[in-house]
Image (cartoon, rainbow, N blue to C red; front, side, top):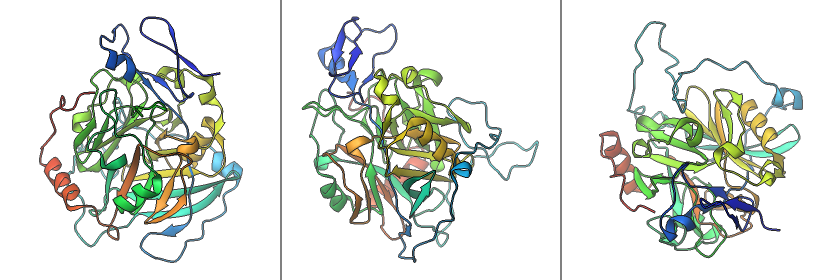
Length: 371
């Protein structure tokens, strides 16, 4: 039996999978057929991983981690009292004003993306460590079939085999991204920003949790219905998925608040997740090789040092490649992927130029390509 979702008029709509989310704003009626259609986006579950540096260094041996150590909860650190945590400067002395540093370190300090395999609490994972301070590190969104904008109610270029996307984007790491509907339109969930440019923008979207990279590659995580809509125009990279797993060091899982309505979302499934520690200098992307609950997924992300974390697309969408080698093939064609570049797998020149322009304040107008 197909899961159902309430539409703005109060009737039940059948959806193709339990991954669907509600999208309509409270007290707002969707007034076009395309808006009604795009208010039915999908919401799954995820991840997986293997130990090896992408710079051709020998494999690293991970220290054994007991289940108790992996799932033990440390006392959370204090943080800024702002919606959507923005990391503080760990070197700032008490009483000194906060400083915002937009520039990344000089050439020669590059720490390429690393990928390693671990087992935590009996769950084998792939852990990808992304150094946001590395001047050669760039994160973007790759779309199926060379599309220049993401699938929406008004536009679609369908989906594509994961292997083909890996070969085309030539990234250090390619992984599954956010959710999409299972109908012919293959609508991508949430707003997407890549290279400081909107790939999908709907001003009324207010569901899920968003990971964004602000100027200087400063990460933030915002749950729209709890904290207000993200300032997408201030994001160099932005992807909405969910549910949220960690908030300011604490487990924070509330699928219904974010717009997930099917109780199956709280079940056990193959998953992927992304998060960052409080200092905000790196991202951790994790894929899980065994089905886990959201609670266990959150506990493992916390044991890895994450302060903020959210669930990504999962199930048969989980996919991972290191360079051109696929480590975890997707069980279905995908509409979008996360692509990560480093010193050994350089980002396209256009992406590097747009990063530099973004730091200078060159932002894309919000209402371009509204969906």
